[in-house]
Length: 161
Image (cartoon, rainbow, N blue to C red; front, side, top):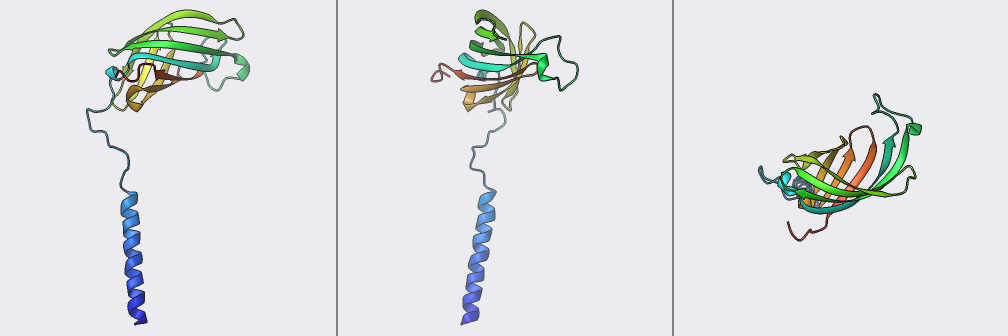
């Protein structure tokens, strides 16, 4: 009788382990099918965000890392309009190195890959890589031109995709 109980417990344990391993390989995230990822159309509408970072004080750095003394701090607020075709315009209010905040227009182009990553180039030559979140509701940028900046922009008209 004791052997039967041990066998029953062993079978139950093996079954539980199999269930655990099988369940752990099941994804709880919705899979994205080919063609359902992002495109330039994913970024369309008005976005706003804030940046903070460090601007390189000279020509673009040739080697990394650069000493902190080669940079000065800046921060900015931005309202951008993406047209869904790879172009954007924006109004930026920025303060660099303690200079009083000034507002100015900006513009540029952007490209988006189906995996929801992309790149953006300002008319001034500054460049950024980005990742799109929540079907285009939020975009996180990282500057890639030698300056150091992190930017998050959120769609202002999120209910109008």
